[in-house]
Image 1 (cartoon, rainbow, N blue to C red):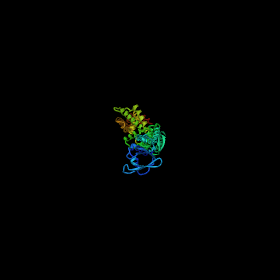
Image 2 (cartoon, one colour; image 1 turned 90 degrees about the vertical axis):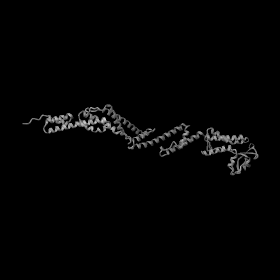
Image 3 (cartoon, rainbow, N blue to C red; image 1 turned 45 degrees about the vertical axis):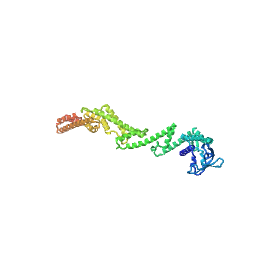
Image 4 (cartoon, rainbow, N blue to C red; image 1 turned 30 degrees about the vertical axis):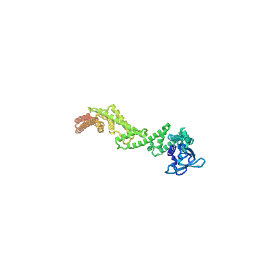
Length: 452
């Protein structure tokens, strides 16, 4: 639809209706015949009053007025009997060609311009009643156009169609073009939907078409889904960088959580993030429970045992940590590994250490404690202090045992059985030993009688 042509047609009508001088004659004074019918208001004499003018119907005219000299020259009118009449410019009040009917009328504003032209022609009719018949004949086609438009039709390229039909065709055309552009894009996620000309036009139509609105909403949702998918891929790639700062990780996670329709990869990643939060809470709770339990004073001769609450938390932590590792999280999704491992290690190793201490197997306890002293510092100072104290205790016990055992062996070698037995018994009182027990049993057996 050529809007500039429509507007120029309407402006032509308006200027034609309100002109108070032979404007068209002045604009067409190139002595070229204008093949338009109409009428001219002609005075009997140049000095006659305009009110005395009478209409002259013509089928074409030629403007032969003199350039630069108002009132000089003449018009040549071809009248219906195909003869020409030459009339001086000074006798002509108005030249009114038949207005052209617009080829396109699709908006109320365009119809209103036609109404304005009709109103101006009616004003001309009142000013010159003698020309009423001619004017009524001229504006009849315009009035018919207005009636058709106001009955719900639209004129496009000279053809009248119902507005509803035109709208349906236009909407269908825009939708096809929009989808073609959308899906023809190599990456629809980067398609600028909001600024697309077809999308913006369809939004206007959708104001009165709920079904169209639903289809546009579905397309926008699909566009947002594709954009979210591309964004999520970029975020996952960034999260594979182990050097990413915790602040950057937090911002990326926030963006992932804001996605309206995450795919399976993102849902799995968000589950990993949730698991990290669970592990952090369980690790913090486990550390607090263990540290509180091992606060001074402590009876170092009494084997330490975790409370049932601490064991339950540590057990859950171990399960969560195992699940996290098996989920293969991105490198930047991390848990406080040292603290987690420390809680789990205390949970797993302390029962056997307590059993060894209860059985006075200080060597086994000492060996196990060596692996706990360093990690216990990740629990807290009380736990580390207890592990060091137990390590010192077991080291002292093992050293005392070893010293007595070695002294007993030396005395036994010298043939001093009674002193050796006493030393072995002292050593056995500190820590059980099958080797020492065997030596005690051997020394304690009576010597066989000597053969005569």
